[in-house]
Length: 172
Image 1 (cartoon, rainbow, N blue to C red):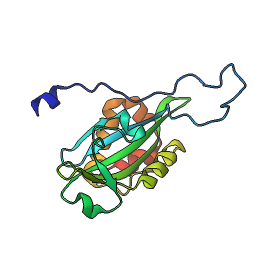
Image 2: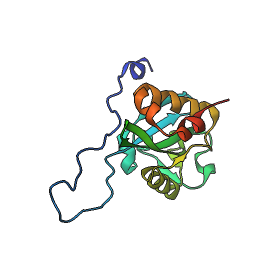
Image 3: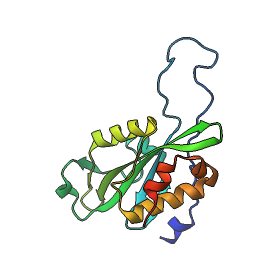
């Protein structure tokens, strides 16, 4: 456990790179890029947020070795997580958190079973890429963990973000 705590976070948010269509007029013009989306996990029990880029292809450390079903009973007694898709964009003031959407997930390591609805995860990633904020269904503690994580990542980006994000993650 102490080893996990001393491990430094190696991955940061992915930032939009140069325009992929810059200088070429052929295939791929107008196609969506996932370069500006980062998966942030919230360990609800530990009150801890972390990035695991492997979640882009359902190969995160949390998901590895787990058979997922859409039946919550299969993963009963497991550890609850939020997988939050965070999309970064740029505006005149600078970079900001443009899309933030949360998906539910439960992982029972002992049973090697988990609960998630893949269609929900895909749809929420899409909505994040379309600059939507969907976090109102999260519990208050997790909202606070996410807000603190985003602020500690980059306070300027937090300040540049839409007021809806700050309001939706505010805990009374």
